[in-house]
Length: 133
Image 1 (tube, rainbow, N blue to C red):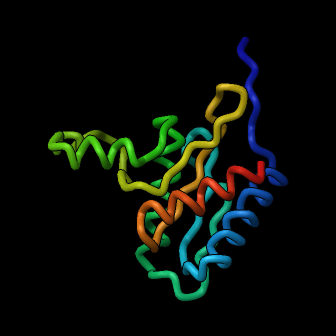
Image 2 (image 1 turned 30 degrees about the vertical axis):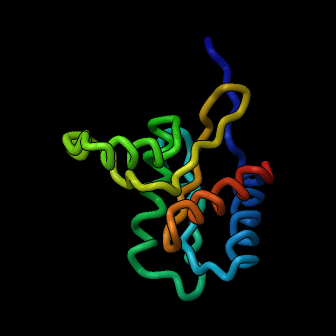
Protein backbone atom coordinates (compact mmCIF):
# COMPACT_ATOMS: atom_id res chain seq x y z
CA UNK A 1 0.00 0.00 0.00
CA UNK A 2 1.30 3.46 -0.89
CA UNK A 3 1.54 5.93 1.93
CA UNK A 4 1.60 9.63 1.20
CA UNK A 5 1.56 12.87 3.15
CA UNK A 6 -1.67 14.81 3.61
CA UNK A 7 -2.56 18.30 4.73
CA UNK A 8 -3.52 18.92 8.34
CA UNK A 9 -5.68 21.75 9.58
CA UNK A 10 -2.55 23.41 10.96
CA UNK A 11 -0.90 23.19 7.52
CA UNK A 12 -3.92 24.69 5.82
CA UNK A 13 -4.15 27.53 8.33
CA UNK A 14 -0.43 28.30 7.89
CA UNK A 15 -0.78 28.36 4.09
CA UNK A 16 -3.89 30.54 4.32
CA UNK A 17 -2.30 33.02 6.72
CA UNK A 18 0.78 33.41 4.51
CA UNK A 19 -1.35 33.87 1.39
CA UNK A 20 -3.49 36.51 3.14
CA UNK A 21 -0.34 38.28 4.33
CA UNK A 22 1.06 38.37 0.77
CA UNK A 23 -2.21 39.74 -0.60
CA UNK A 24 -2.47 42.40 2.11
CA UNK A 25 1.20 43.38 1.71
CA UNK A 26 0.40 44.22 -1.92
CA UNK A 27 -3.05 45.72 -1.21
CA UNK A 28 -4.72 43.03 -3.31
CA UNK A 29 -8.35 42.24 -2.49
CA UNK A 30 -8.53 38.58 -3.49
CA UNK A 31 -10.31 35.34 -2.72
CA UNK A 32 -8.10 32.46 -1.58
CA UNK A 33 -9.12 28.80 -1.58
CA UNK A 34 -7.22 25.76 -0.36
CA UNK A 35 -8.32 22.24 -1.23
CA UNK A 36 -7.10 18.71 -0.66
CA UNK A 37 -5.76 16.41 -3.37
CA UNK A 38 -9.27 15.45 -4.44
CA UNK A 39 -10.26 19.08 -4.95
CA UNK A 40 -12.40 19.29 -1.80
CA UNK A 41 -12.44 22.74 -0.21
CA UNK A 42 -10.62 22.88 3.13
CA UNK A 43 -10.21 26.64 3.64
CA UNK A 44 -11.56 29.78 2.01
CA UNK A 45 -11.25 33.53 2.54
CA UNK A 46 -12.54 36.43 0.46
CA UNK A 47 -10.77 39.60 1.53
CA UNK A 48 -12.68 42.84 1.89
CA UNK A 49 -13.27 44.40 -1.50
CA UNK A 50 -12.66 41.24 -3.54
CA UNK A 51 -15.17 40.80 -6.36
CA UNK A 52 -17.99 38.35 -5.71
CA UNK A 53 -17.03 36.33 -8.78
CA UNK A 54 -13.63 35.62 -7.23
CA UNK A 55 -15.43 33.54 -4.58
CA UNK A 56 -16.42 31.13 -7.35
CA UNK A 57 -13.23 31.25 -9.39
CA UNK A 58 -10.62 30.72 -6.63
CA UNK A 59 -12.01 27.35 -5.45
CA UNK A 60 -12.23 26.13 -9.05
CA UNK A 61 -8.62 27.13 -9.70
CA UNK A 62 -7.57 25.22 -6.57
CA UNK A 63 -9.63 22.17 -7.53
CA UNK A 64 -8.27 22.09 -11.07
CA UNK A 65 -4.66 22.47 -9.88
CA UNK A 66 -5.10 19.66 -7.34
CA UNK A 67 -6.80 17.24 -9.70
CA UNK A 68 -4.33 17.92 -12.52
CA UNK A 69 -1.32 18.07 -10.20
CA UNK A 70 -0.07 21.11 -12.08
CA UNK A 71 -0.47 24.85 -12.20
CA UNK A 72 -3.61 26.07 -13.92
CA UNK A 73 -1.47 28.37 -16.06
CA UNK A 74 -0.63 25.28 -18.11
CA UNK A 75 -4.29 24.89 -19.08
CA UNK A 76 -4.64 28.60 -19.83
CA UNK A 77 -1.59 28.39 -22.11
CA UNK A 78 -2.98 25.31 -23.90
CA UNK A 79 -6.21 27.17 -24.65
CA UNK A 80 -4.48 30.44 -25.58
CA UNK A 81 -2.24 28.53 -27.99
CA UNK A 82 -5.28 27.46 -29.98
CA UNK A 83 -6.42 24.19 -28.49
CA UNK A 84 -9.85 25.53 -27.60
CA UNK A 85 -11.32 22.01 -27.67
CA UNK A 86 -9.68 21.64 -24.25
CA UNK A 87 -12.49 23.83 -22.89
CA UNK A 88 -14.77 20.80 -23.25
CA UNK A 89 -12.69 18.63 -20.87
CA UNK A 90 -15.04 17.21 -18.21
CA UNK A 91 -14.89 18.33 -14.58
CA UNK A 92 -12.21 20.94 -15.20
CA UNK A 93 -13.02 24.58 -14.54
CA UNK A 94 -10.89 27.50 -13.43
CA UNK A 95 -8.38 27.09 -16.25
CA UNK A 96 -6.78 30.46 -15.56
CA UNK A 97 -3.42 31.16 -13.95
CA UNK A 98 -3.67 31.34 -10.17
CA UNK A 99 -4.15 27.70 -9.19
CA UNK A 100 -1.00 26.12 -7.77
CA UNK A 101 -0.61 22.53 -6.55
CA UNK A 102 0.91 21.80 -3.15
CA UNK A 103 3.62 19.19 -3.76
CA UNK A 104 5.23 17.31 -0.87
CA UNK A 105 7.80 14.55 -1.43
CA UNK A 106 6.62 14.16 -5.01
CA UNK A 107 2.93 13.88 -4.07
CA UNK A 108 0.23 16.43 -4.74
CA UNK A 109 -1.50 16.91 -1.38
CA UNK A 110 -3.77 19.77 -2.44
CA UNK A 111 -3.70 23.18 -4.08
CA UNK A 112 -4.22 26.88 -3.56
CA UNK A 113 -6.40 28.94 -5.87
CA UNK A 114 -6.46 32.73 -5.87
CA UNK A 115 -8.62 35.09 -7.87
CA UNK A 116 -9.23 38.83 -8.34
CA UNK A 117 -6.01 40.49 -9.47
CA UNK A 118 -3.79 39.89 -12.52
CA UNK A 119 -3.30 36.18 -13.06
CA UNK A 120 0.42 36.23 -12.31
CA UNK A 121 -0.36 38.12 -9.08
CA UNK A 122 -2.95 35.49 -8.15
CA UNK A 123 -0.22 32.87 -8.61
CA UNK A 124 2.18 34.95 -6.53
CA UNK A 125 -0.25 34.93 -3.60
CA UNK A 126 -0.80 31.17 -3.94
CA UNK A 127 2.93 30.45 -4.07
CA UNK A 128 3.59 32.67 -1.03
CA UNK A 129 1.06 30.62 0.90
CA UNK A 130 2.59 27.32 -0.17
CA UNK A 131 6.10 28.57 0.69
CA UNK A 132 5.00 28.85 4.34
CA UNK A 133 4.47 25.09 4.43
